[in-house]
Image (cartoon, rainbow, N blue to C red):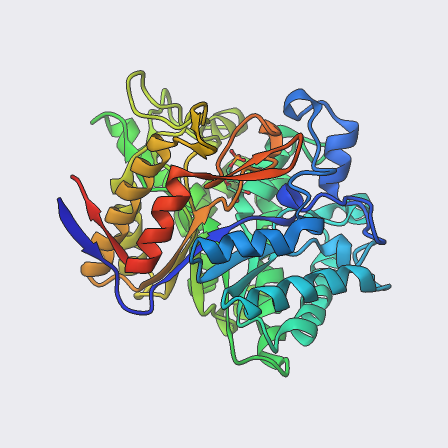
Length: 457
Ligand code: BG6
C-alpha cells in the first residue's frame, strides 16, 4: 500500500454534457439540435433511445448539485446547449434557456463548486445542418457570436471556458458514420480546420470581452499510440496514426500550424486544399490558456498494408480493437493507465509544458450488482485508482496537470449506445429518475477530502 498525494490546489471534478443529461428537448423555447434530429429520424441509436428526457437534469439540477456537494466535488464541467440559448443558432435569444444556465451556475457557486463551461459538446443547432454544419464559415461566425454572448452574460462568474469537445469525434467520426447525413471523410478533415478557426476567433472574442480575467482552452480526445508489432509497417503506421488522431489537433492550437507529414498525406489522398495563411496567423495570435484532455484508453496500430488511398485511410481512422484477453471496459476500450502517463509526459514535452486538465476519464461498466442501494462497481473503482496513480506519477515528474474530471457524474445518454452503457459514478434509474451512489463515487468523495488515496499496486 502506498499513499498517493496530489499537490495543494489540485481540482477534483466530474463532467457531463448538455444533450446527454438535460432532457427537456423541446421545452421553454429550446430549438432543435442535430442530436434531436439524429435520435428522432435515424436508426443509428441503440434501441431507438433519445435524449428527450435523459437524466431530466433540466428539472433536477438542484438535486444534482446537492449530490456533487455531498461528493465534495470542487468543480463541475458541463456544456451549454447552443440551441437552448439561440433556438436557430443565431439572432433571437431564448431567455428561458439563459435563465436555466444562470440558475445552474449560481447554484454551483453557492455550493462552492467551480463551473467549467464547454461551449460546444456536439449539439449543433439543426438549422446549421442545412448550410453544411462545420464546413461553413457562416457557422463559424455564428458560433463566435454565441460565445461572445456567453462571455458577456456569464463571464463574471465563469472563469474556465472550453471552446470545443473533441473535434476528431464530432467532425470526423460522426461524418465517417454518416451521422450528419453523409459519409465524406475529406469534407470532415477539411471541417476540422474550420473548427480550429472558430476556436481561435472565440479565444480572441474572450480576450476582448469585459470578463476576460479567466482561462480559456479546448478539449481534445487524445490517446497514446503504440505499434502492435515490431514490423516497419506498424512503426511507420504509429507515426501516421499519431499524426491523424493527435498532432492534427494539437499542433494548430499550440503552434498555429499543421503537422507537415499529416498534411502531406492528406494532400496526396484527398487533394487537401492549402490552408490560408491568415487562418494560421489567427491561430498563432490566439494561444490557449490550458489544454483539456479526454483520455480513456490507448491506440495500437497494426497496419496490413501502406496507406495509399481513401479506403486505407478510413480503416486506420477508427479506434483499434484490443486483443483477446486484454482488460477492456464495457464499451470494449482497452484499460491501459500507462497510456495516460505517456500521453501527459509527451504533451508536456512537445508543447512547452502547458497547463493541463484531464477533462474526461472514466469507465463504462455493467454495474449489475447493487447492495443496499449502492452499486458495487469495483471494476470502475480499480480503473480510477490506476488512472489517478498514472496521473500522479506524471505530476511528480513535472507535468503541469492541475485538475481531473471523472466522466461521468451520472449514467447518461451515451450517444449511439443510448442508455445501454453506464459511465456514471452516480447511477440513474431511468424509469424513476432515482439517483444512487456507487462504490466509486463514495471512494471519490474520500479521495477529494484527503486530496489523495492509498494505492495498492
Ligand atoms: C467522450 C465524450 O468521447 O466519451 C463523451 O466526450 C462520451 O460525451 C464519452 O459520453 C464516452 O463515449 P461513448 O462513445 O461510449 O459515449
